[in-house]
Structure formats: structure tokens, C-alpha cells
Image (tube, rainbow, N blue to C red; front, side, top):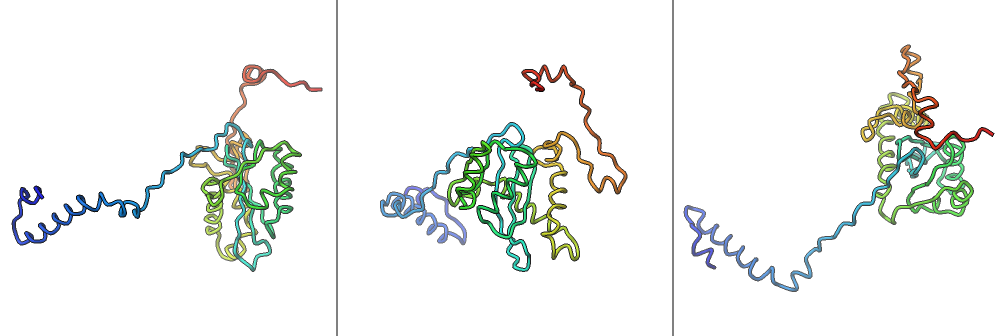
Length: 248
């Protein structure tokens, strides 16, 4: 109680100050040392260290996620969103359901058949992504499979953010397009893939293909995208590669 003796108390708030100081002293002296109180306190949960997925080239890891559109009037009530972790290039496939067969068919036709075989697929532990069909697809094309921990969607945060981006883009549609926005998903994805991404400083399509795509809007405006010139030639290939692969 030494603090009460030495504390200068004055003015109309004398009683209030005295009670406050006394309560603080009692709390520090008795409550902090109470075993029962300490056990009932909320424990500070230690946070696990983040282990970001490190990628160094296009299609090294492709993240997958399903989202329900929640619109019974639409013929396609689900959307499979996929993104390349290196370039941020995105695919979005409208589906009638989220079955394993539908999932595998969409991945095969939109990614593998067109862009080649990724190094790895990353997804949550949904039954469609953990199915026997998915395992067979990965085995057939030499693709590894990684997954997030249960009830922890932040482990697939990049594609989760892409989900929200697609929905935000859909809100920019006007008039009748707003009510039928699912039909305009290809247009929305084209806009996304050809817009500079804040995390890379480049458009996803540019990083994926090494050039700026000539878009319909460029044709309408009579604009020709500036293309980088390839100046390395044969010398560059020999310097940056172990040698040219055999042609036969």
C-alpha cells in the first residue's frame, strides 16, 4: 500500500482516484497470483510459422478451389477456380456439380490438354480433390499433389483471393449482364489475366506466354501491344541452357 501513501491525491476526484488505486493494488497483489484465476484465463495461442509455397517457374504449382455460386436459377451453380502460383494466371470453369469426375475432366481439358502437365496441384481436402480419379490423373501425368490442413483454408489463400476477385469483377458488369454474369466468366478472366498484378508487377498472361496478348479491345481501338524483342538468339540459348535438345 506504499503507493497510496506516496501518491498525490487532490481535487474533487480524490475518492475516485483512491478507489481506483486500491483496486489496482488488490488486482496485482492477489488476482495475478491466484492459481484458479490463472487456469481460467484465456491462453495465448502460439501461432505456427508460415510455410509459403516457393515457386520458380510457370506451372510448377497450380492451386485449385471450388466455389458455389448460390444461384439456383443458373444452369451452372459451381465454379472451379485454378491459378498458377508463379505467374498468377487463372482459369475458371463453370460446372453443374463438384463431383470427382467433373473436377478431373475440367482440369484435364482446361489445363493439361492446353498448357501441359503442371508439377503439382495444391488444394483443400475436399473429396473431389482427394478422390481416386484425381490420384489416377496425377499418377498418369506425373503430377504431385499437396493439400491444406483441415478447416484451414488460409493454406490455399492465393486461390481463395482469386475467388473473391472473380466475384468483384462480376459486380462491374452492367444491365442484363449482371443477372447472367456466369456467362461472362471468360471475359472476366481475360481482363484479369491481362491486367498487371500487384504482387508481380506484370500481367499474368505476359508471364505465362512471354508476350502481351492482342485483345479484342486492342483491335477496336486500333492499338498494337508493344512486344519485347528477342535478342538472345542462339548465343543466349547456349549460355542459359545446357545445350540445344536433339531435334530427332
